[in-house]
Image 1 (cartoon, each protein chain N blue to C red):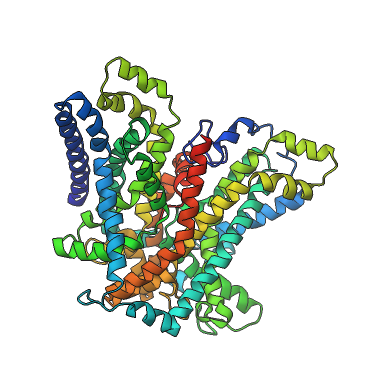
Image 2 (image 1 turned 120 degrees about the vertical axis):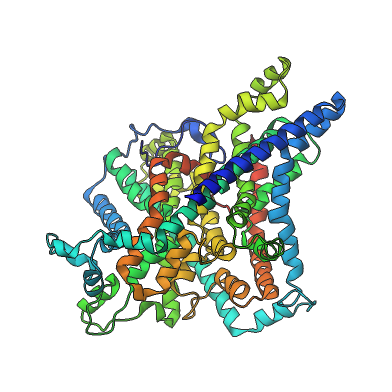
Length: 326
Length: 311
């Protein structure tokens, strides 16, 4: 109870203090001559926001870059040692490879499944469309930890002879096979794929909602024109609908790509990167939190940033183009 | 009021995919394909929905089963003997609640509420300036914000952990919500600014002619008009912070002040406590976001569309 009151106090205090700050600064600026008032006022309005971004994102990002050239406790410079150690270790190369697998599989499958559901559900009556979409969208609201709990229960393995309480092993043993500890099977990265299924399960709803809106936005005349010209359903889909929703496809793809690159909670809870399922964000967390190695953790983040850079450039370009079209 | 987010919002919404095409949008009711599903389409969707709901169903059912039943037989066996009431119980919830989840539940609110409310106002001021005021570097600053939308939060964590250690913030709720305020800021400004730029400029100009200051215009006109965008961000941020594990684990960790995600992650690790407890705990941790999500889905979808790339 006291904690809740404290939380409310934090809100009231935080909002109140911020309001007071804006009000005082505003009054202060109003005492300046009109010309200066006009010049200074925008900075009063954006000041706190810029301060928050600077303090919590920009400054730490620069510092992370610097720390990646220092040792574990940030007491001495080590040059590129963190990078060469990481890239030289077989374990980290496997981590990178796993992350690449995630990147190669999850965004594409999520977009394809989402588009499939969007197009299929579009043909249902309004009630069943709503219902089926809600069911597929719901995992989106569940935390990564919750998602992992749910799927842990699917992949759970019990020794032979005991009743299986995990769904996958129940089906598997019913087919006459011996139970398998699925999450420990790393042949061909099988367990990594099992983890990917969780993220796909969680993200298809998002992909479906965006793509569904885009599909519904395709002008009917273009579809009718194609039909009159004798196009079949498949041709209409690939030649008329897909080109018109391509921008949304890219948006969804990039969004899922970003969440895949920094996938943490699902892997952390399911395997903590063991059994050769490690990915870059889990590796980062363990270097920072368990090993207390600031240098290596920073170097991992810098590599992640380099990987994200093309997406950032795309994002900025896309924004500029949108602004120009406004 | 439950909408599935299937109907795109009628007003042009910030960051929405292809808002300009909204003009040519066909009416939902009159969708030419609607109702024309053949049995194959229906079957495919029924199978998909079944596959999507079964995993969740597993933990929902297990959370109501006695420890004995949960640990010795699959949850699906309730289908064959649904009337065997000896296998059901409600005590898993009370046990999970008393063994840490109740505490964590309140902690989650203590972190999530400030992290949701405080950034809204700060971002609204900034978004107003970006939309309606002229100042040097305005466009470059905004491009920086757009770029930061995609930057993973991990980029800030190593130095923040050091700074928090130095000022004694580690282990305080403030450590987590302050970080979330910073991390959520680019998205908040982006959503609000995009929304505000769809508002008629004439409103602001006529207010100016009437002698209203920017401060007044902001409070009396722009904030009330921006409520849908404010709500979108609030819901997005609420779900994001409530469901976050990484930052809570790093800055609060397990212990007296742990939040629900950390507790459940701990329960997964210590399975000797039994599945019935883990599943009940997981459901307690999910109930708030799922309710928020279901009741406010419309707003959430807009926030999602605009800010789903959030790092």
